[in-house]
Length: 532
Image (cartoon, rainbow, N blue to C red; front, top):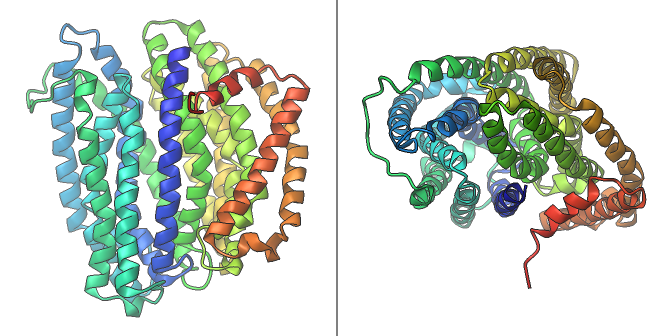
């Protein structure tokens, strides 16, 4: 358990620094192009295209397939060296081809994702896309290297490398503001030099991030070499597993296309694509820091237990991880919900925009705790090399997301459209996690629900008075008309203040009632503190 604790702290510390610098990166980007603007949405669509491909590579093929397969290959006489070289060569070739095809199809891709843009907006977004799409190769290479390192229990570099990306982006976006001023919200104001400066900066950050990760490769004890002899390495088996994950992520991307197209109709004066992405970034902050830092080492251990047929240990891993994640993630969800307006002010250009974007964040937060449970449940299926079952319960979620987005587009006006799309996504995710948990319970003959579900309920009850205390703190700062809405910095400080009050009261209540999960969680938290 101490190994998981150390790995969690290493990943968590890197994730915290990465996310904080990521927040600063987005603050500078919003200052350059605006949060609710036509130009901001045009860039958001173009810069999201390589991220969508990255999601297919990282969430689909790598997490579901590569980690368990590398762990198995470690038992080979060469420690998995040949397998990893073959896999890396194949992955690199696939990335080069994918990037080239995406570059050729750039105008079509932008049209697919943002059909309701004006012609000028489509042209600007396409110009951005030509600069951004090379990120596909470097995102994929970074994901491939990182997951191989994770599988070899070298967790730190994959988590810390994005910090360099953020620093490069911050410098580049700040340079854009110095050269051209900001925020540049009107599409008609953009010149080719402005377009190249902004988008090339975003791509340069990804390139540097990948190069930095490569420097840590020798720590895994591996030597890579090009190897095009792919027969006999089990790629047919990997292909069958990857086929289901590929279909699953494609289904998610299709649902995302529908969402983006619906949101493109609100672009200009109301929260749309870029504002929704920024609200999602806030939503992902606690998810990344808490769920990924604690859950990633558990997934490696869980995969080892599953490969060895130690099913009781797998069930114990599920219970421990969900209870540990739950204690932190419930507090984070409530704290961010109470501080929704000041937190949204971080990524907006004024108090009115913060108030407009806050409902989007609140709607996303409804599924934060369920997604933490889904992280554990879904990856347990992956540990047993079952990618088929996750495809089907994800397909249901994607169908609900698609139907919900279309319904929101038909019923809601532009001002509430982004919040409606976020709400339907959260509801679909809640349905997904219920179905996934039931299916895993049937497969394993139980997943300890009677142990972790009551814990989540206890955490939720403890969060209610904590939320009340946090809201009181928000009111005492002046609420919407107070200093927390003045600018991005005061918004961040206000969110930290309100969130801190929520956390203190929440932990106090758990301590008062002697929650059994509190002591190990605090012990894990103390690992983040510097030693004297």
